[in-house]
Amino acid sequence: MIVLNVEWWKSAIFYQIYPRSYADSSNNGIGDLQGIMGKLPYIKDLGINAIWISPFFKSPKQDFSYDISDYYKIDPEYGTMSDFEDLIEKAHSLDIKVILDLVLNHTSDQHKWFQESRNNINNPKRNWYVWREGRGRNRRSPPNNWKSILGDSAWKWDEITEQFYLHQFLPFQPDLNWRNPEVQEEMFNIFKYWLNKGADGYRLDIIHTLFEDKDFRDNPRSLRLFPSDESNSSFFQSRIHTQFLPETAEICKRMRIIADSYSPPKVLMGEATGNASIYRSLLGEDNDGIHLIFHFKLNNVKFSATTIKQTIEEMEHLLPPPAWPCLAFSNHDIKRMISRLGNHQYKARLMSLLLLTVRATPIIYYGEEIGLKQVKINNKYIQDPIASMKFFGLPFGKFFARDGCRTPMRWDSSVNAGFSSDTAVSWLPIGPEIDFLNVKSQEKDPNSMLSFFKELIRIRKANVAFTLGELKILPTNNKKSFCFQRVHNQNILKVFMNFSAKTLELEKDKENFEIIFSSIDLKELFREESKRNSLKPYEGIILKKIINAYSSSRSK
Image (spheres, rainbow, N blue to C red):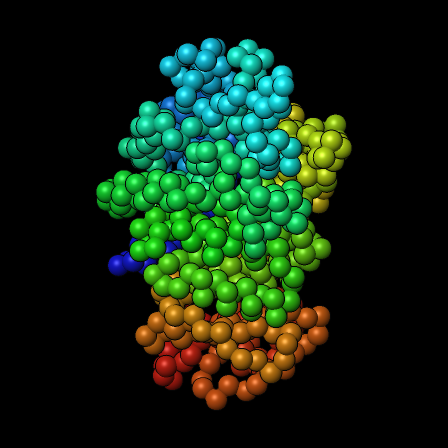
């Protein structure tokens, strides 16, 4: 259960659902809200406290509902308002909170606001978006040098009114003008609407891009080509005039006031690029901004004890208590973690052990709990609009398509893996290895990836140190292992992790600890070797301090 007397989101385990791929109740090959509702008992049994559902608002779905055409309506492909209300009610009855995915930076170009805005330059909605005159003799050169996420110009020429509109992301996603008070008022109305409907908070999409420089100054040049976790520069441009402006931090504070006015408070989780030294402003100097921002750096560092240790040390330094890190090793935009690790199950287990034991709010991406791998999608089945985009004028988009991490969840070994009926055509291919990479098969195996997650989650919940405890990195006798300690009063645990392909000897602990969890052999807990002082290749273990001779940490 969620630990009491602390902000609920600090002790909760979140689970991201990409609704199009989770469960199809209508057998049309597309997941929906009723499908999610039907799987809530499974989610509860897994030990999840909150689900984050990617957007299901009305949309032309050019970017699968990250291009919203009506914030107040649910897209018919996903269900109805009644379905949403039933989902909220059932989730809450199971003590599962529901987090929605809200896109505040831009809308679809099919949204009625934008349709009105582009109708003529005197339309009342004109200033709801960012329009500018072009440069050059014919006024058809972009207003400045700002680039989109894909590296092309962030400005698109509109033939109707012969001006450019800003799109920091895809061309069919025009940026809203957050400097317009009317836009702010309406977006805050939307913000409150779904909270009043029972949503327990938001994941705020690309929250760092709400405001742009009011004078539209050129971004300075940079030597960095691709975005990274160290900088908000990319495509040879430092985005100082289009990201992390002070006005965005003020909006975050206003959202926090609203979120905290509910009982219990709603949670706000932000997506932003760069490391904590960059995004810290959105959390607020006094921790009065949004509650959480995804810390993505661990997704891109080398799989080694040294780099993992350095990254955790940096995270602890940049986000000391009461600030709180948020970690997700897979999501709908990046290659699945297990496949980034060469589809090595024990490496994936090791990283999942880290996810659920460090000081952070963990987010599990659907399918991660069964070791679902990245699926290679044939070009003819690719759905992601990025696949058709060009980088530097070259057709490289298909190499960045995100479909492979969005394939349907696998519930059993049937033709469509239980995601949809056997006769339905799934919106994306299911992929290979259905026989064992599914829930039903793994529920029967006490040493499966699913069993691993269930037991690890059980241990996390049974030990308050993993949610409230201080984190202290401990020295080890080699560079291939990483160890840290979590302490809350008399609840003392140590986590040892072996990042090598060799067995590692551990220094004998002078205190009385015993193994309560092994990432490799879940049945080991009941064997005499639970006091061993070695780590198997790519193994992680949890040790718990025995307070007295009559306490058995393995039983709780």
